[in-house]
Length: 126
Length: 367
Image (cartoon, one colour):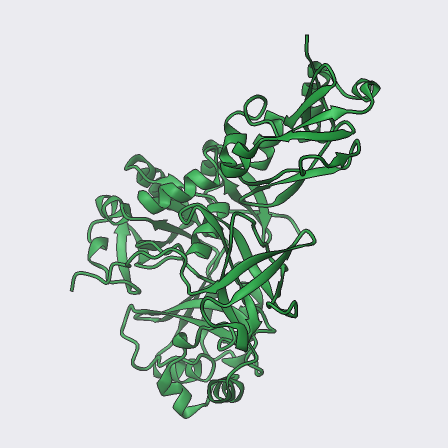
Protein backbone atom coordinates (compact mmCIF):
# COMPACT_ATOMS: atom_id res chain seq x y z
CA UNK A 1 0.00 0.00 0.00
CA UNK A 2 1.24 3.45 -0.81
CA UNK A 3 1.81 5.99 1.91
CA UNK A 4 1.13 9.77 1.63
CA UNK A 5 2.98 12.36 3.69
CA UNK A 6 3.17 16.16 3.73
CA UNK A 7 5.90 18.79 4.14
CA UNK A 8 5.90 22.17 5.86
CA UNK A 9 6.46 23.72 2.42
CA UNK A 10 3.04 22.36 1.39
CA UNK A 11 4.13 19.50 -0.84
CA UNK A 12 2.56 16.05 -0.73
CA UNK A 13 4.56 12.89 -1.42
CA UNK A 14 3.23 9.43 -2.19
CA UNK A 15 5.63 6.50 -1.92
CA UNK A 16 5.17 3.31 -3.99
CA UNK A 17 8.12 1.01 -3.43
CA UNK A 18 11.18 3.18 -4.11
CA UNK A 19 9.39 5.68 -6.36
CA UNK A 20 7.84 8.80 -4.83
CA UNK A 21 5.31 11.05 -6.58
CA UNK A 22 5.40 14.70 -5.47
CA UNK A 23 2.98 17.59 -5.89
CA UNK A 24 1.67 20.63 -4.04
CA UNK A 25 -1.28 20.48 -1.67
CA UNK A 26 -4.79 21.80 -2.24
CA UNK A 27 -4.14 24.20 0.61
CA UNK A 28 -1.08 25.54 -1.25
CA UNK A 29 -3.10 26.13 -4.42
CA UNK A 30 -5.74 27.98 -2.43
CA UNK A 31 -3.06 30.24 -0.96
CA UNK A 32 -1.44 30.85 -4.35
CA UNK A 33 -4.59 31.55 -6.34
CA UNK A 34 -4.74 30.92 -10.10
CA UNK A 35 -1.58 29.13 -11.17
CA UNK A 36 -0.44 30.28 -14.61
CA UNK A 37 3.09 28.89 -14.89
CA UNK A 38 4.91 25.77 -13.74
CA UNK A 39 8.57 24.80 -14.09
CA UNK A 40 9.72 21.28 -13.23
CA UNK A 41 13.12 19.71 -12.53
CA UNK A 42 14.92 17.99 -15.39
CA UNK A 43 14.48 14.29 -15.86
CA UNK A 44 17.63 12.49 -14.75
CA UNK A 45 18.71 15.28 -12.39
CA UNK A 46 19.34 14.67 -8.71
CA UNK A 47 17.55 16.66 -6.04
CA UNK A 48 18.30 16.97 -2.34
CA UNK A 49 15.68 16.95 0.40
CA UNK A 50 14.35 20.50 1.05
CA UNK A 51 16.11 21.84 -2.05
CA UNK A 52 14.23 23.70 -4.79
CA UNK A 53 12.85 21.45 -7.49
CA UNK A 54 10.58 23.72 -9.46
CA UNK A 55 8.59 26.94 -9.55
CA UNK A 56 4.93 27.79 -9.70
CA UNK A 57 3.60 31.23 -10.49
CA UNK A 58 0.20 32.67 -9.88
CA UNK A 59 -1.02 35.90 -11.46
CA UNK A 60 0.39 37.56 -8.33
CA UNK A 61 3.81 36.05 -7.62
CA UNK A 62 6.34 33.25 -8.10
CA UNK A 63 6.91 30.53 -5.48
CA UNK A 64 9.55 27.83 -5.29
CA UNK A 65 8.57 24.19 -5.12
CA UNK A 66 10.76 22.12 -2.80
CA UNK A 67 11.34 18.39 -2.75
CA UNK A 68 10.50 16.69 0.55
CA UNK A 69 12.89 13.79 -0.23
CA UNK A 70 16.20 13.26 -2.02
CA UNK A 71 16.57 11.20 -5.16
CA UNK A 72 16.78 11.09 -8.96
CA UNK A 73 14.01 12.63 -11.04
CA UNK A 74 12.60 9.76 -13.13
CA UNK A 75 9.49 11.45 -14.53
CA UNK A 76 7.86 14.89 -14.80
CA UNK A 77 4.28 15.86 -15.56
CA UNK A 78 4.35 17.80 -18.86
CA UNK A 79 0.55 18.21 -18.72
CA UNK A 80 0.80 20.80 -15.93
CA UNK A 81 3.49 22.74 -17.80
CA UNK A 82 1.25 22.89 -20.88
CA UNK A 83 -1.83 23.82 -18.83
CA UNK A 84 -0.92 25.09 -15.34
CA UNK A 85 -4.61 25.63 -14.46
CA UNK A 86 -4.78 21.83 -13.99
CA UNK A 87 -2.84 22.35 -10.76
CA UNK A 88 -5.74 24.34 -9.28
CA UNK A 89 -8.25 21.79 -10.52
CA UNK A 90 -6.73 18.57 -9.21
CA UNK A 91 -3.60 19.33 -7.16
CA UNK A 92 -3.38 16.15 -5.13
CA UNK A 93 -3.86 13.63 -7.91
CA UNK A 94 -3.55 14.11 -11.69
CA UNK A 95 -1.60 17.39 -11.32
CA UNK A 96 1.45 15.78 -9.71
CA UNK A 97 4.79 17.53 -10.42
CA UNK A 98 7.55 14.92 -10.60
CA UNK A 99 8.53 11.38 -9.60
CA UNK A 100 11.70 10.47 -7.73
CA UNK A 101 13.66 7.27 -7.34
CA UNK A 102 14.34 7.87 -3.67
CA UNK A 103 17.71 7.57 -1.96
CA UNK A 104 16.77 7.26 1.69
CA UNK A 105 13.35 5.88 2.74
CA UNK A 106 13.89 7.11 6.32
CA UNK A 107 13.41 10.72 5.08
CA UNK A 108 9.72 9.81 4.94
CA UNK A 109 9.68 9.73 8.75
CA UNK A 110 10.52 13.45 8.98
CA UNK A 111 7.27 14.39 7.22
CA UNK A 112 3.73 14.93 8.53
CA UNK A 113 0.72 12.66 8.16
CA UNK A 114 -2.59 14.04 6.86
CA UNK A 115 -4.04 15.01 10.25
CA UNK A 116 -0.89 16.77 11.37
CA UNK A 117 -0.57 18.59 8.05
CA UNK A 118 -4.19 19.78 8.08
CA UNK A 119 -3.62 21.14 11.58
CA UNK A 120 -0.36 22.79 10.49
CA UNK A 121 -1.97 24.35 7.41
CA UNK A 122 -4.82 25.74 9.46
CA UNK A 123 -2.51 27.22 12.07
CA UNK A 124 -0.07 28.79 9.60
CA UNK A 125 -2.75 30.38 7.44
CA UNK A 126 -4.67 31.86 10.40
CA UNK B 1 -0.74 54.90 10.81
CA UNK B 2 -3.95 52.95 10.97
CA UNK B 3 -5.08 51.26 7.79
CA UNK B 4 -8.11 52.97 6.27
CA UNK B 5 -11.20 51.21 4.99
CA UNK B 6 -13.39 52.32 2.12
CA UNK B 7 -17.17 52.62 2.46
CA UNK B 8 -17.52 49.32 0.57
CA UNK B 9 -15.50 47.35 3.13
CA UNK B 10 -18.56 45.50 4.47
CA UNK B 11 -19.68 44.61 0.94
CA UNK B 12 -16.19 43.33 0.10
CA UNK B 13 -16.36 41.11 3.19
CA UNK B 14 -19.84 39.89 2.23
CA UNK B 15 -18.37 38.91 -1.16
CA UNK B 16 -15.50 36.94 0.49
CA UNK B 17 -12.74 39.33 -0.51
CA UNK B 18 -9.11 38.60 0.27
CA UNK B 19 -7.64 41.88 1.47
CA UNK B 20 -4.22 43.47 1.05
CA UNK B 21 -2.89 46.74 2.30
CA UNK B 22 -2.48 49.16 -0.57
CA UNK B 23 -1.44 52.81 -0.15
CA UNK B 24 -2.66 52.77 3.45
CA UNK B 25 -6.03 51.18 2.67
CA UNK B 26 -7.42 47.70 3.20
CA UNK B 27 -8.30 46.81 -0.39
CA UNK B 28 -9.71 43.65 -1.97
CA UNK B 29 -7.05 41.87 -4.07
CA UNK B 30 -9.54 39.24 -5.22
CA UNK B 31 -12.84 37.57 -4.37
CA UNK B 32 -13.70 33.86 -4.24
CA UNK B 33 -13.59 33.23 -8.01
CA UNK B 34 -10.02 34.40 -8.38
CA UNK B 35 -8.10 36.81 -10.59
CA UNK B 36 -8.39 34.91 -13.89
CA UNK B 37 -12.18 34.52 -13.68
CA UNK B 38 -12.63 38.10 -12.50
CA UNK B 39 -10.48 39.34 -15.38
CA UNK B 40 -12.45 37.37 -17.97
CA UNK B 41 -15.79 38.39 -16.48
CA UNK B 42 -14.81 42.06 -16.89
CA UNK B 43 -13.75 41.52 -20.52
CA UNK B 44 -16.90 39.56 -21.41
CA UNK B 45 -19.51 41.03 -19.12
CA UNK B 46 -19.16 43.74 -16.46
CA UNK B 47 -16.99 44.26 -13.39
CA UNK B 48 -17.14 46.81 -10.56
CA UNK B 49 -13.92 48.14 -9.02
CA UNK B 50 -13.75 49.99 -5.72
CA UNK B 51 -11.25 52.76 -6.40
CA UNK B 52 -12.34 54.93 -3.48
CA UNK B 53 -8.76 55.01 -2.24
CA UNK B 54 -7.90 57.25 -5.18
CA UNK B 55 -7.93 60.99 -4.64
CA UNK B 56 -10.83 63.12 -5.88
CA UNK B 57 -9.50 66.63 -5.93
CA UNK B 58 -11.97 69.41 -6.68
CA UNK B 59 -10.42 72.79 -7.49
CA UNK B 60 -12.82 75.71 -7.75
CA UNK B 61 -12.17 78.62 -10.06
CA UNK B 62 -12.63 80.21 -13.49
CA UNK B 63 -10.38 81.82 -16.11
CA UNK B 64 -7.53 82.52 -13.68
CA UNK B 65 -7.50 78.92 -12.53
CA UNK B 66 -7.27 77.74 -16.14
CA UNK B 67 -4.25 80.00 -16.73
CA UNK B 68 -2.57 78.83 -13.53
CA UNK B 69 -3.20 75.14 -14.19
CA UNK B 70 -1.75 75.52 -17.68
CA UNK B 71 1.51 76.55 -16.02
CA UNK B 72 1.47 73.12 -14.34
CA UNK B 73 -0.06 70.70 -16.83
CA UNK B 74 0.93 70.44 -20.53
CA UNK B 75 -2.72 70.62 -21.55
CA UNK B 76 -4.85 73.02 -23.54
CA UNK B 77 -7.32 73.50 -20.69
CA UNK B 78 -8.72 76.71 -22.15
CA UNK B 79 -10.14 74.83 -25.12
CA UNK B 80 -11.10 71.73 -23.17
CA UNK B 81 -14.87 71.41 -23.36
CA UNK B 82 -17.02 71.44 -20.24
CA UNK B 83 -17.29 67.94 -18.71
CA UNK B 84 -14.49 66.57 -20.91
CA UNK B 85 -11.52 64.70 -19.45
CA UNK B 86 -7.84 64.35 -20.31
CA UNK B 87 -5.13 61.97 -19.13
CA UNK B 88 -2.09 63.88 -17.91
CA UNK B 89 0.70 64.07 -15.31
CA UNK B 90 2.01 66.20 -12.51
CA UNK B 91 5.71 66.74 -13.21
CA UNK B 92 8.67 68.21 -11.40
CA UNK B 93 10.95 70.79 -13.03
CA UNK B 94 13.07 68.00 -14.55
CA UNK B 95 9.91 66.52 -16.12
CA UNK B 96 10.00 63.55 -13.74
CA UNK B 97 6.51 62.31 -12.98
CA UNK B 98 5.01 62.92 -9.50
CA UNK B 99 1.74 61.28 -10.53
CA UNK B 100 -0.43 60.45 -13.52
CA UNK B 101 -4.02 61.61 -13.40
CA UNK B 102 -7.30 62.33 -15.14
CA UNK B 103 -8.43 65.95 -15.19
CA UNK B 104 -12.02 66.93 -16.01
CA UNK B 105 -13.41 70.41 -16.59
CA UNK B 106 -16.53 71.00 -14.50
CA UNK B 107 -18.86 73.97 -14.16
CA UNK B 108 -17.19 74.96 -10.91
CA UNK B 109 -13.60 74.33 -11.94
CA UNK B 110 -11.75 71.03 -12.30
CA UNK B 111 -11.94 67.53 -10.89
CA UNK B 112 -8.63 65.67 -10.79
CA UNK B 113 -8.45 61.94 -10.03
CA UNK B 114 -5.13 61.10 -8.36
CA UNK B 115 -3.37 57.89 -7.36
CA UNK B 116 -3.96 56.84 -3.76
CA UNK B 117 -0.30 56.68 -2.82
CA UNK B 118 0.40 60.12 -4.32
CA UNK B 119 -2.70 62.13 -3.48
CA UNK B 120 -1.54 63.85 -0.30
CA UNK B 121 1.76 64.86 -1.83
CA UNK B 122 0.03 66.00 -5.06
CA UNK B 123 -2.31 68.14 -2.98
CA UNK B 124 0.64 69.84 -1.27
CA UNK B 125 2.46 70.45 -4.55
CA UNK B 126 -0.60 71.87 -6.27
CA UNK B 127 -1.53 74.04 -3.31
CA UNK B 128 1.93 75.53 -3.32
CA UNK B 129 1.96 76.16 -7.08
CA UNK B 130 -1.50 77.70 -6.96
CA UNK B 131 -0.39 79.86 -4.02
CA UNK B 132 -3.57 79.09 -2.09
CA UNK B 133 -5.59 81.26 -4.48
CA UNK B 134 -8.34 78.69 -5.05
CA UNK B 135 -10.54 76.49 -2.93
CA UNK B 136 -9.14 72.96 -3.13
CA UNK B 137 -10.91 69.94 -1.66
CA UNK B 138 -9.43 66.45 -1.58
CA UNK B 139 -12.86 64.98 -0.95
CA UNK B 140 -12.91 62.16 1.60
CA UNK B 141 -16.71 62.18 1.72
CA UNK B 142 -17.06 60.77 -1.77
CA UNK B 143 -16.37 57.23 -2.92
CA UNK B 144 -15.27 56.29 -6.43
CA UNK B 145 -16.24 53.12 -8.24
CA UNK B 146 -15.51 52.03 -11.79
CA UNK B 147 -17.79 49.76 -13.79
CA UNK B 148 -16.02 48.25 -16.78
CA UNK B 149 -16.78 45.81 -19.57
CA UNK B 150 -19.16 45.45 -22.52
CA UNK B 151 -22.36 45.06 -20.47
CA UNK B 152 -21.59 47.97 -18.13
CA UNK B 153 -23.36 50.65 -20.16
CA UNK B 154 -26.62 48.70 -20.17
CA UNK B 155 -26.35 47.76 -16.48
CA UNK B 156 -25.48 51.25 -15.23
CA UNK B 157 -28.08 52.87 -17.48
CA UNK B 158 -30.74 50.64 -15.90
CA UNK B 159 -29.87 52.14 -12.52
CA UNK B 160 -28.96 55.69 -13.57
CA UNK B 161 -30.81 56.61 -16.73
CA UNK B 162 -28.96 58.58 -19.39
CA UNK B 163 -25.36 57.48 -18.78
CA UNK B 164 -25.29 55.45 -21.99
CA UNK B 165 -25.34 58.71 -23.96
CA UNK B 166 -22.02 59.89 -22.50
CA UNK B 167 -19.09 60.01 -24.92
CA UNK B 168 -15.72 58.44 -24.12
CA UNK B 169 -13.64 60.73 -21.86
CA UNK B 170 -16.55 62.95 -20.96
CA UNK B 171 -18.85 63.15 -17.96
CA UNK B 172 -21.80 64.81 -16.28
CA UNK B 173 -23.82 65.05 -13.09
CA UNK B 174 -26.61 62.53 -12.62
CA UNK B 175 -28.81 61.64 -9.67
CA UNK B 176 -29.14 58.43 -7.67
CA UNK B 177 -31.56 58.37 -4.71
CA UNK B 178 -31.65 62.17 -4.82
CA UNK B 179 -27.87 62.30 -4.50
CA UNK B 180 -25.70 64.08 -7.05
CA UNK B 181 -23.28 61.66 -8.69
CA UNK B 182 -20.58 62.64 -11.17
CA UNK B 183 -20.09 60.02 -13.86
CA UNK B 184 -17.43 59.94 -16.58
CA UNK B 185 -17.15 57.43 -19.40
CA UNK B 186 -13.63 56.23 -18.72
CA UNK B 187 -11.64 53.60 -16.95
CA UNK B 188 -8.37 51.76 -16.88
CA UNK B 189 -9.05 48.27 -18.20
CA UNK B 190 -9.16 48.69 -21.98
CA UNK B 191 -12.92 48.18 -21.86
CA UNK B 192 -15.83 50.53 -22.27
CA UNK B 193 -16.94 51.72 -18.86
CA UNK B 194 -17.64 54.46 -16.36
CA UNK B 195 -16.23 55.97 -13.19
CA UNK B 196 -18.79 57.09 -10.63
CA UNK B 197 -18.16 59.60 -7.86
CA UNK B 198 -20.83 59.32 -5.16
CA UNK B 199 -21.14 60.27 -1.48
CA UNK B 200 -19.90 57.55 0.86
CA UNK B 201 -23.32 56.91 2.41
CA UNK B 202 -24.84 55.79 -0.89
CA UNK B 203 -22.01 53.85 -2.56
CA UNK B 204 -22.94 50.55 -0.90
CA UNK B 205 -26.55 50.75 -2.13
CA UNK B 206 -25.52 51.72 -5.66
CA UNK B 207 -22.95 48.92 -5.88
CA UNK B 208 -25.43 46.32 -4.61
CA UNK B 209 -27.95 47.44 -7.25
CA UNK B 210 -25.32 47.08 -9.98
CA UNK B 211 -24.52 43.59 -8.68
CA UNK B 212 -28.23 42.72 -8.75
CA UNK B 213 -28.29 43.74 -12.42
CA UNK B 214 -25.53 41.25 -13.19
CA UNK B 215 -22.22 43.03 -12.58
CA UNK B 216 -19.66 41.63 -10.12
CA UNK B 217 -17.05 43.08 -7.79
CA UNK B 218 -13.51 42.70 -9.16
CA UNK B 219 -10.33 42.98 -7.08
CA UNK B 220 -7.09 44.88 -7.55
CA UNK B 221 -5.41 41.70 -8.83
CA UNK B 222 -7.55 41.61 -11.97
CA UNK B 223 -7.38 45.40 -12.26
CA UNK B 224 -3.62 44.96 -12.67
CA UNK B 225 -3.82 42.21 -15.31
CA UNK B 226 -6.53 44.14 -17.20
CA UNK B 227 -4.60 47.42 -17.30
CA UNK B 228 -1.36 45.71 -18.29
CA UNK B 229 -3.04 43.88 -21.19
CA UNK B 230 -4.42 47.28 -22.19
CA UNK B 231 -0.86 48.70 -22.15
CA UNK B 232 -1.67 51.22 -19.42
CA UNK B 233 0.91 52.43 -16.90
CA UNK B 234 0.85 51.90 -13.16
CA UNK B 235 2.39 54.73 -11.14
CA UNK B 236 5.26 53.64 -8.91
CA UNK B 237 6.12 50.88 -11.37
CA UNK B 238 5.97 52.04 -14.99
CA UNK B 239 6.08 55.72 -14.05
CA UNK B 240 8.02 57.56 -11.36
CA UNK B 241 10.16 60.62 -10.73
CA UNK B 242 13.07 59.16 -12.73
CA UNK B 243 11.00 58.89 -15.91
CA UNK B 244 9.56 61.63 -18.09
CA UNK B 245 6.33 61.42 -20.11
CA UNK B 246 8.41 61.29 -23.33
CA UNK B 247 10.46 58.37 -22.01
CA UNK B 248 7.19 56.75 -20.88
CA UNK B 249 6.00 56.96 -24.49
CA UNK B 250 3.08 59.13 -23.41
CA UNK B 251 3.82 62.14 -25.58
CA UNK B 252 0.36 61.76 -27.14
CA UNK B 253 -1.00 63.14 -23.87
CA UNK B 254 0.98 66.39 -24.17
CA UNK B 255 -0.81 69.21 -25.98
CA UNK B 256 1.02 70.38 -29.13
CA UNK B 257 -0.32 73.86 -28.55
CA UNK B 258 1.38 73.94 -25.17
CA UNK B 259 4.64 72.58 -26.54
CA UNK B 260 4.83 75.51 -28.92
CA UNK B 261 4.53 77.89 -25.96
CA UNK B 262 6.72 75.81 -23.62
CA UNK B 263 5.64 77.49 -20.42
CA UNK B 264 4.73 74.62 -18.10
CA UNK B 265 6.70 72.87 -15.36
CA UNK B 266 9.27 70.58 -16.97
CA UNK B 267 8.73 72.06 -20.45
CA UNK B 268 12.45 72.63 -21.10
CA UNK B 269 13.25 68.94 -20.70
CA UNK B 270 10.11 67.79 -22.54
CA UNK B 271 10.85 70.00 -25.55
CA UNK B 272 14.49 68.93 -25.59
CA UNK B 273 13.51 65.25 -25.49
CA UNK B 274 10.87 65.71 -28.20
CA UNK B 275 13.49 67.34 -30.45
CA UNK B 276 16.57 65.25 -29.65
CA UNK B 277 14.99 61.94 -28.71
CA UNK B 278 15.42 59.97 -25.50
CA UNK B 279 17.99 57.39 -24.43
CA UNK B 280 15.46 55.02 -22.84
CA UNK B 281 11.82 54.43 -23.71
CA UNK B 282 8.86 52.38 -22.49
CA UNK B 283 7.92 49.43 -24.71
CA UNK B 284 5.71 46.36 -24.66
CA UNK B 285 7.55 43.06 -24.22
CA UNK B 286 6.18 39.66 -25.15
CA UNK B 287 8.08 36.70 -23.68
CA UNK B 288 8.22 33.58 -25.86
CA UNK B 289 6.61 30.56 -24.23
CA UNK B 290 5.01 30.85 -20.82
CA UNK B 291 7.78 32.36 -18.68
CA UNK B 292 6.60 35.35 -16.63
CA UNK B 293 9.05 38.24 -16.35
CA UNK B 294 8.12 40.36 -13.34
CA UNK B 295 9.07 43.88 -12.34
CA UNK B 296 12.87 44.45 -12.08
CA UNK B 297 13.67 41.59 -14.52
CA UNK B 298 16.78 42.57 -16.47
CA UNK B 299 16.57 42.86 -20.27
CA UNK B 300 19.54 41.95 -22.49
CA UNK B 301 20.18 42.36 -26.22
CA UNK B 302 21.38 39.59 -28.54
CA UNK B 303 25.00 40.37 -27.65
CA UNK B 304 24.20 39.81 -23.96
CA UNK B 305 24.46 43.51 -23.08
CA UNK B 306 22.12 44.78 -20.36
CA UNK B 307 19.76 47.23 -22.11
CA UNK B 308 16.87 47.72 -19.71
CA UNK B 309 14.44 46.49 -17.12
CA UNK B 310 10.87 45.25 -16.87
CA UNK B 311 8.59 47.59 -14.89
CA UNK B 312 5.39 45.47 -14.99
CA UNK B 313 4.97 41.83 -15.90
CA UNK B 314 2.33 39.21 -15.33
CA UNK B 315 0.18 36.57 -16.99
CA UNK B 316 -2.50 38.05 -19.23
CA UNK B 317 -5.65 35.92 -18.97
CA UNK B 318 -7.21 37.25 -22.21
CA UNK B 319 -3.93 37.00 -24.12
CA UNK B 320 -3.51 33.58 -22.48
CA UNK B 321 0.19 34.14 -22.01
CA UNK B 322 2.76 36.33 -20.30
CA UNK B 323 2.79 40.09 -20.94
CA UNK B 324 5.21 42.80 -19.80
CA UNK B 325 6.26 46.41 -20.16
CA UNK B 326 9.62 47.93 -19.49
CA UNK B 327 12.22 50.49 -20.46
CA UNK B 328 14.96 49.71 -22.98
CA UNK B 329 17.68 51.76 -24.62
CA UNK B 330 16.11 53.59 -27.52
CA UNK B 331 18.01 51.74 -30.27
CA UNK B 332 16.44 48.45 -29.12
CA UNK B 333 12.89 49.77 -28.92
CA UNK B 334 11.78 48.86 -32.43
CA UNK B 335 8.90 46.43 -32.73
CA UNK B 336 9.98 42.76 -33.15
CA UNK B 337 13.50 43.41 -31.79
CA UNK B 338 14.63 40.20 -30.14
CA UNK B 339 15.69 40.53 -26.50
CA UNK B 340 16.42 38.22 -23.56
CA UNK B 341 14.90 38.35 -20.08
CA UNK B 342 16.83 37.05 -17.09
CA UNK B 343 14.45 35.06 -14.90
CA UNK B 344 15.85 32.96 -12.04
CA UNK B 345 19.34 33.06 -13.52
CA UNK B 346 18.39 31.93 -17.03
CA UNK B 347 17.95 34.08 -20.13
CA UNK B 348 14.65 33.62 -21.93
CA UNK B 349 13.84 34.97 -25.41
CA UNK B 350 11.25 37.70 -25.85
CA UNK B 351 10.47 40.41 -28.36
CA UNK B 352 9.59 44.09 -28.27
CA UNK B 353 5.97 44.53 -29.28
CA UNK B 354 3.46 47.29 -29.73
CA UNK B 355 0.93 48.07 -27.02
CA UNK B 356 -1.78 47.23 -26.12
CA UNK B 357 -1.59 43.44 -25.89
CA UNK B 358 -5.34 43.33 -25.94
CA UNK B 359 -7.41 45.72 -27.97
CA UNK B 360 -11.07 46.46 -27.99
CA UNK B 361 -12.63 49.60 -29.36
CA UNK B 362 -13.82 52.11 -26.81
CA UNK B 363 -17.29 53.49 -27.38
CA UNK B 364 -16.68 56.87 -28.94
CA UNK B 365 -20.26 57.77 -28.26
CA UNK B 366 -23.51 58.17 -30.05
CA UNK B 367 -23.29 61.80 -31.08
